[in-house]
Image (cartoon, rainbow, N blue to C red; front, side, top):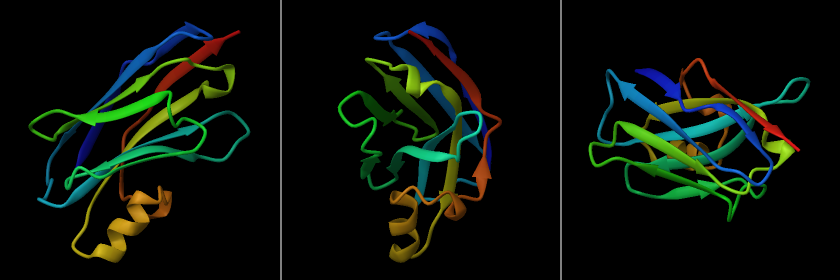
Length: 129
């Protein structure tokens, strides 16, 4: 599976950005796609996840401000980011993983980075205050 992110940029605090991630390759009927982010000197953290059964999850820090969605073909994932804060500035990565078992999906929906095998190169988001 190949993942390509786009949509990053610079924005002032309170502004909005929309990230996109296009997936190609061996995407199976049951899979999850997620957004992670990593700021300099910090650990990578999960932001949002959406699975093929339409289940969705968010990190507490972005709930109510970020919205994850996917197109009808389920190969492009979006992250609409509103009310951006300076602490949202990071490199945002798209991740994906096929799954066959419910216990795997549980890990994916928990935004366990180790559970995701496929990663994009990331797109930079800078938020100025």
